[in-house]
Image 1 (cartoon, rainbow, N blue to C red):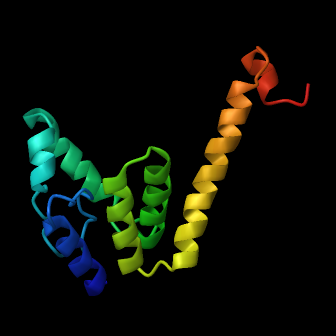
Image 2 (image 1 turned 30 degrees about the horizontal axis):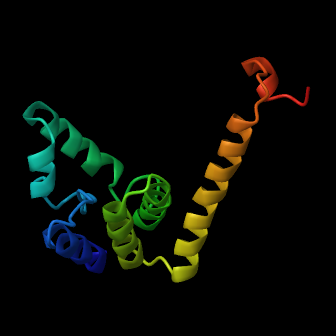
Length: 136
């Protein structure tokens, strides 16, 4: 866990690529301050609520572990696409123990879901919503 926390702090301090807001640390450790990029981009009234949500959702001791959360984040970031987020989530996923194979599979899964969604939505044929999820 300490390796994960140190990797997270290193990432957050690095050259403006500190995009990953911070995964919360152990409950006994006080939360970090929001990173500079977040302070520079969010309206003042949104900063604290957004930072609190980041700490709560990305907490590695939640229902999903930090590795899983960062693999999900990486998969989504690859599809958005956001190079900063891909970089950050890859570093954090690896620090949390993700293998190269897990990283590739997470990205491939997101790509497949996006492809299937594109095909489904693009070739819907004008069907109404009631028939989209049936075999009719």
